[in-house]
Image (tube, rainbow, N blue to C red; front, top):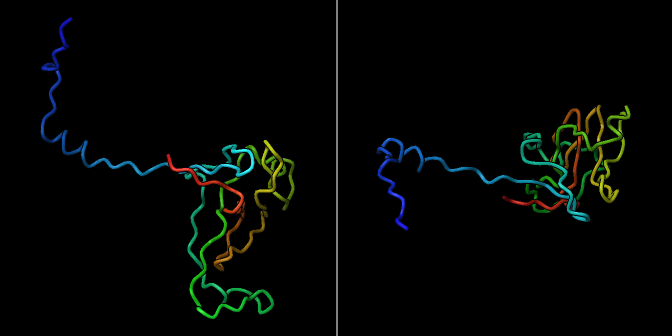
Length: 137
């Protein structure tokens, strides 16, 4: 058998440059740590500006941080999704549980909630990073 001749396919230099310049950003999905079910992807994450840290909290909620460094967000905030059954039931606030294993993944509140960085997110559908696996595809 003879190898196929690829002379019919030609790529000019402008097409080569555009192919090389495409650098796809790696896709991130979030899975339940307990049962590995996909609960969110990067497209559903709602970004927020980091708050001013401890200054944003009441005195009783402040912790003694001698290094005074800005806190890293321990949660991600997402858009409401179909697997969030309590949201569809009409609750104003409740826990978010995994559909597969019923593990508590976070909370939601239509009135909003405060991230540990100090920023307020309204409405808030919070998933704790400690309960999720972050998978890069």
